[in-house]
Length: 448
Image (cartoon, rainbow, N blue to C red; front, side):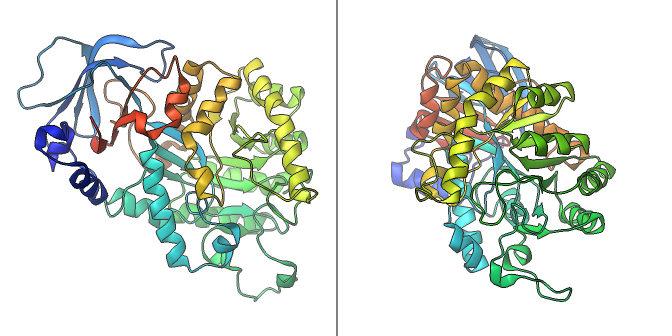
């Protein structure tokens, strides 16, 4: 099926026939593929490069060279028609198995059903132009395996495995009726499914961390502070002691990878940094001193554009969750401003949970960042920047090669976009503007 690499019309395929081929998976070019007549956003430069061609051979970018050179004798060609070629987008904060199903379904549904929903969601994720997901909590190991071996279509996945949480932490999904738990009581469904791992004390944190590494985690996720959606951990709470956090950090460091933590408040962020954590997820309530500390320690800040808008979770007015959400929303502007002021290494993620409607708005959420950044800064954050964060996994990275950039020997994850996103970032919000999607040198969409 290598003909998908050329235009559909050139092979006489109608829309329905092409859709059928898409459903069957990717078409990997057996021959090199040359992108011509393009403008290039390379993931780093704040302006488009004109007059270049990009040659893909296998799953790598073989060369980025001046246009006008003859294509290799056996290469296929895609004429970009002046469109923008750019790296595939990276979402640095995902929960692929929890993104599209309601909370109660996620906690009570048949696991086979949940995985089928996750597979469908992973395909939609890729079709929005996001070729890589850094998953920070959930049973994604099987999903990743099925994507990697071609059973289903989806993004590359950097998996954390289960979210490690203390009792009454942000990852504790149990109810009042589940407590107290005796030593030999069965684990809760959220634990047996691989969504969460309840661990109290240094020894349990070590065990649960090592279990995720055993399963293939590329990084480790701990809950270091309170959250919004949960019932039994106040937003202001600080979770885990420094010795507990440090135990996870040391175990991860022994495997040459790192720990990231869920934390909103200055106290929780500071405690995590003192323990050696290398990335903060959220942090929307950080103050200036905390932002300065993040910058000084070289810690990554994985922020999300949480606002009280159409993508906000509709918590009932007057509920504790609504009150916590409003606190977070009120801190979003300050967090982005502080991150930019102190030149913190900032990642983009969506953190979509329990809503298929919001999951379908990945590109729109990315486009919101122009509230604080230029379009070029936004795209760099979601490509080269997030690629640098992925590289923190070192030898635990599940894929060998550089992501988020268009340069020689980088992995061939590419998008061909209608229009200029450096002028109009909202183009990213409409998947119809993405005319070609390539992941690992294989084409998953071509509507030229």
